[in-house]
Image 1: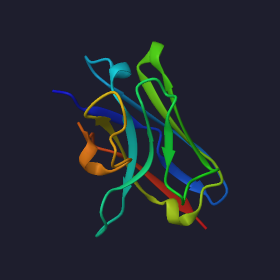
Image 2: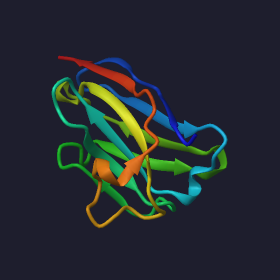
Image 3: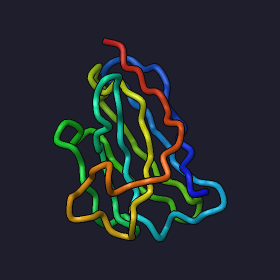
Length: 127
């Protein structure tokens, strides 16, 4: 079953940094677009950052532009989300999703274009 494994979350003070990692077991992710999403209680899962299979196309939510960076390490089958200058509003469970194809779809970084969700990793930012 194609499912991601997310890691790297934790508790950090406002202004701090974290790097999240995403991988999967038994499948190579280099043929797929990948997206990082986040969710808080009572809210929809929102796209944070997405990239195509090469890592050339990178889309970001306005709220994280200039602070978050999505990248890929094909040799390790890993996708990273580097998060800098974290704010309290970044507090959420972060999930990694596998795209339906090698490109991010025309709708952009939206939940319907991704699947294989893992358990997520909790990020908590204290002010």
